[in-house]
Length: 367
Image (cartoon, rainbow, N blue to C red; front, side, top):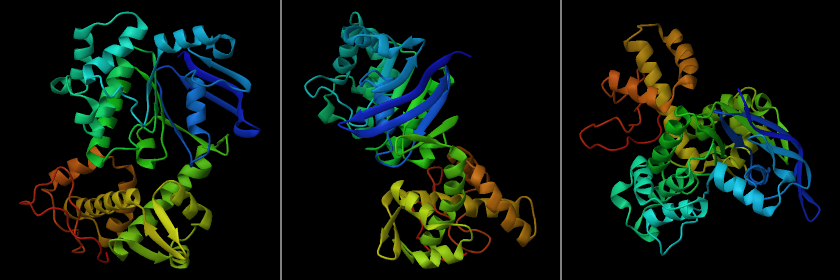
């Protein structure tokens, strides 16, 4: 398989401050890679250098076989125009142009406009009926899908996305990520910057940056993924806002460290307020899904596999960590959308559920 991106000792400094300090990264053609890390770790800087929007101050970056450092400004812009599609968090749509015209603008700078092709691209992202609406008449999710259509209209070999779901609600985040999954199935090379663990899990591989350097993913991700679900579930049981002392969490969950809790705060899951841990909005949403997966897994092991209580507990704890959102919904549907787990605790509803308009079930309750 050909290499799409290769960086060697890549460095970028701004007025003496190092944003990237000797980064070595390789991405194969057709691969989907998530670049992750806390704010200020160099994620967006790396993406901008790979996109040719910024130049390194040291090292080398090769994209699709071309040494970007050897290209002057005009040839770099031409390379980016012909081979790279970019999706930004802030959309960057022209406000006085319609969705269709925003997509056609990308065609104009590439070669020539083709209204039918641009309209077909909007159809492909589910916005054919919104083609003649201005950005101000579109929701955030719709604007982001226009951005994806714009990025794809010139058929780039490489698609780069910088926090593409950062400004979206849960429903639109799901729609946008479904589009990325489909693009990957079609063979696009995707590099997606995100600080969201759930988004990162969708990629084939994750590259973790910290303080401008690549960190071995297993050193952080396995620890975060192993313990964050337990912390979030503990806060969920405590009530709507969480509110458990840091000391309580550290003493109850064996193996967790204050550094891991701080990382969860950086990832937008928790808020540390004094000695207390509270949910951030993203953490509350994630906690709800964790509880739902766990309690559905318990229900599956009890009702279908008919295992003992101890086997059920151990099996559910292992099984829940491999469940995707789609698998979780499939299990919920198979079990006919149960309202409670074997312990009698409520199972939060999902998008597959219709319990007579009852809406989300209340938070909390001991297992």
